[in-house]
Length: 308
Image 1 (tube, rainbow, N blue to C red):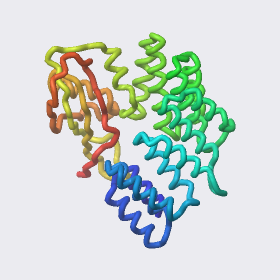
Image 2: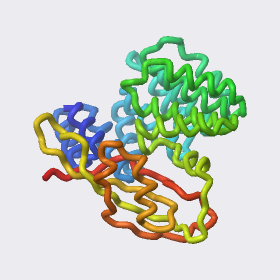
Image 3: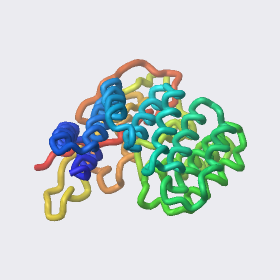
Image 4: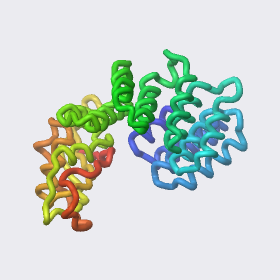
């Protein structure tokens, strides 16, 4: 049943996730708190998510995953001291995972701009650990090194991370490629940066590289505006074997002269198999942007599917 809750979260079906959480509650399984809190978080109900986990860790202080998610949510909201405390608690007890806690604490230290301390924390993680995966360790290390302006070492850490098995972790692979693009741009390798950025987008269109694509394009327009654009199209395959091919919608924010130009800037961010089917569902101009670089500002990661 917990897997059902995870699947609901991955497909952004929050209503179903809460139903699963209630079912887990009915059988007294602590997974209810994880599913409910993560659903609240993804719905934007951050305080409710944190309160859920705070209550859960008081009732079940020996469950590491509850402390781990609480630490993650504290970290995301800038409550860094509380995050470190929660991550340390996640490592305690017979089921705690010290290496994973060290990685999570390193992320907090990086966010607090304590880069050297974060690297020292990463160095405590034994090489070859299964959890956390080594590619994630190298990703955080590369972030810290880049923040310290040690670009050569940062690039080496990124490439070491990419050389590890990341095919089953597309978000990590996309993040490593995005960081490779940023590092190469700092090294004035614009072609290499652009290539890495598009590779990241091909894996995860919401990867943090849209700004790099815009910077390399380096185009401004006196009549440009920030557009909020909802596109629609026909998906490239059935969602289930033997099923119908669905329609889909997706959301973007784009600096462009008009909605038509925005659509053309969006096309490369989508799978090549669906680009020809893309059209504008609705577009709204939010503000003038004559001084800003033309291009996609943000791509929302998820899709809304509609079966015929």
